[in-house]
Image (cartoon, rainbow, N blue to C red):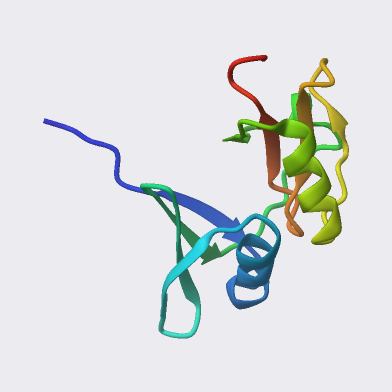
Length: 117
C-alpha cells in the first residue's frame, strides 16, 4: 500500500521563507528541525521547506515545471487578504478565476475557487 506523505519545497533560506508561508499564505508552523528544515501544515497537508536552489525559474505559471494550487470559497476576498499581507499576483492561468503568484524563490502557485475553475 502507498499513501501520500508530504510535499517538499526547495527554497534558498527556509527560515526566511517560513514568514511568507505563515504570514501571507496562512500555513501553520509545525516544527523547525536543525535550524534549517521548516515543517508547515495547511489543512491536513504537510510541507517541508528544504534548503536548495531553484534554478529552473519560469516567467509564467504555464511555463513552470510544477505548481501548487490553493482552493478558496471566495476568490475575491482571499485575493484582497493576500494583497493586504503583501502578496503580488503575477497574472492568471487563462481565467480571472485562476490567479497566479510565486513565493520569494520563484515556486509557482495558483489560487482558485474549485467550483468556478
